[in-house]
Image (tube, rainbow, N blue to C red; front, top):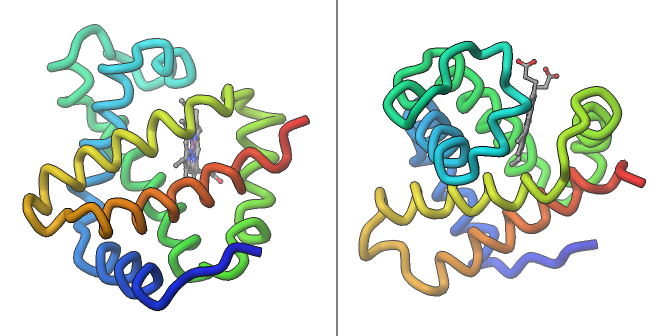
Length: 147
Ligand code: HNI
């Protein structure tokens, strides 16, 4: 089981409490689709992903970005059992969506970049370490049902 220090727990909860999912989620997913264009293949039904402007202006991308944040919100609310809370989501991504699990980390990194840009100097090295530890646990839990 993952151990969290008090600082990590407080930092992660504080970041998510202040985060606007409707802004951060769409930005992070759009960034992922632009920077790592192979991730677009999973979103064929989202329509126009032709270039960066189209991706950033695509309402389905924005909506799905919020869905991903709501998924992460569940992990924040269950920090001591992220593996359990993500069991079903992991099966979905593995067996139904066939998402290559390497992509989870790429999206997580995009989320860190978006958050860093928003937080500015408040995104200290300690804060970054706590946030990325949380994302690493989420990603590892999403990978659990792959075999
Ligand atoms: Ni992901 C659906 C959470 C990474 C492709 N994804 C979901 C749903 C949640 C979710 C929640 C909705 C499930 C449901 O309908 O029951 N996804 C997350 C989280 C991460 C993540 C928390 C990582 C941080 N997903 C990714 C990545 C890809 C991805 C990296 C592909 C590159 N996800 C999908 C696709 C769907 C999806 C595709 C289905 C979308 C749809 O509308 O049908």
